[in-house]
Image (cartoon, rainbow, N blue to C red; front, side, top):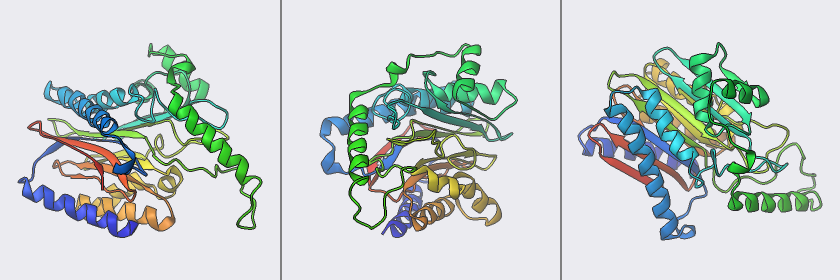
Length: 339
């Protein structure tokens, strides 16, 4: 079903594209993929998510329409989502096994393939801004932990006490995960003890946020920000800050991923979309659907958003839902949540 669905999504996107006369999209965003079922979300919650996604799209769109580049648009959209506790990025990030919020982010500029990323940070209010500072003001690509925090402070970026990121709903999610963890250490239904190196609890919703943008000069950029996986241990880092896995942009396409990060890392998922387009000469929708299909075949789940140089989009996923939205150059907004 997962494999079939990712292909269906790609085909539907092509049909929609044809129906609207090949609208040229300039910004696409996601707010995470996972077990997102309409029956489990109240009308008020759905309205809040739709409003948050719309605000993020308008922030990025405003940047493009005032002559700023696609990096500015990506940053503007993601900052709003990092500041919104609905999403697993910035304020509202999930908790590690030790009860901390550890944040990751990456951003990439397509024309030159310059990139910046931070991982495992706990005091940077907006990790996507730190990632951009690494891209523009450092000779490195990825900085982690205390070093990344020191760099961000030296760049004058806004910091926050770790308590700023805490939300009660995320804390309770950790408590449920820890309870499952303790039960799994006692109950041995499969005849094999659960390895403590990997959390037995997988998030029911992956709330990673991301954006891809195409500016008026034809330049592409991509960015992703996340709090990672609930109950993660041992300094685990997922795909979001890894260039080519969760985030990638070149002259042809920009990609941001969300889902079970280990599988996106193993698949070099974001880069694979670009590679299939370049070397296999596949259209965007087919390349993106192929990547999500392979993620499913490996046993992983999630989705991605992608935008090519012609303004075509793809948003395949193999879960029950993905928070996602797009805006055309004329300002027409589309927001989707469920299958």
